[in-house]
Length: 232
Image (cartoon, rainbow, N blue to C red):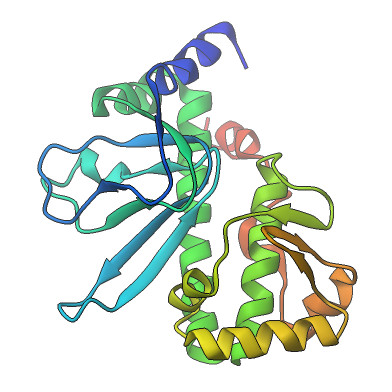
């Protein structure tokens, strides 16, 4: 990156604030909310029914950008809650717009990140609609491992995350009891070891096969700069 690129990125992280676990960052219907970058911790993005039933749309990890749609939408339609102690930095929509228009390298990278997010959402919809509960759980855990490795916050075959049974159930559309049974099955099969918030995967290849996991949709090997050159 150029010095200008680094300065532009630093502007997104210029206003860090710490928020404890279990706090609501944004709720549906709020006016004038700002986008933010998650600097540390985990944030839950969810929708809830009138009966209070929650579906988690996404689990944000460090480095993710949140509430970007507030740049063009008047009101938010999602809940954003801290699943752990978090540090976020809110930024003005104009700052993001200038990244897209005045920093072409960063603009291409941001378009790339948004495209990958779209692919990730499509894969999760496919999981809910077509994969078994066992595959769905294994697939999500490998998905999270791959994302966290790319962000530099996970080891080769393990990560730490606040994944309670309630969070997993609301992410995967399953009851707590079903998630608990499936987690035990993964342990017995030798695919998973857990200790508090630590998730270890002794047999990544075996779990990937059992869970129908192919990380192609995360586009881990693609270089957005190559696409930028192709557009010139």
